[in-house]
Image (tube, rainbow, N blue to C red; front, side, top):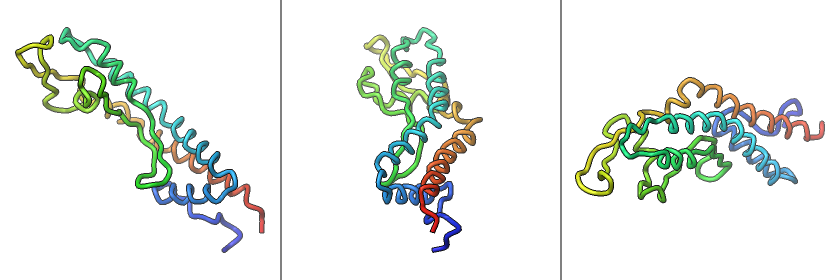
Length: 171
C-alpha cells in the first residue's frame, strides 16, 4: 500500500460511500463515527426537507374540505433519511406514508401527482369527486437546488474521510 494516499478509495458515489462506511467500521470508535456521518448528511438535507414542507403547506384548500390537517399531516412525514450499508446506502429526503391521516396513506404521493389527483367522498357521503392537489410540490422543492444538496452531502462524506485519513499514523 502506498503511503501517499488513503487506505480506501473515496469517490462521491455509492461505491465511495460504501468504502467510507467500511473504513469507519475498522475504527475503534466506528459506531460514533457512523452516527456523526449520518447526522451530518441529514443536516445537509434539512433545508430541502423544509422547502418540501413549505411546498405542501402552500397548497390551497380552495374550500374543497382539505383543511390544514391534511397538509400538516403530510408535512410532518417529510424527513431526510440516511442509510449507511445494507441493500441501499445514501441520503435522500422522503415523504413517508400517512396511514393515520383520514385513511389516506398515500397522501404525499397523490397530492404530488401530475395527473388525476385522488377520489374522495363529499363530506364522507356520496357523490364521489376527484380532488387535485398542488402539482409537483415535492419535486419543485429540489428542482433548482439539487446540486447544492448533493454537494453538501458529498462535503459531509469528504469531511469524514479527511478525519479518518488524519487519524492514520504516517508510516
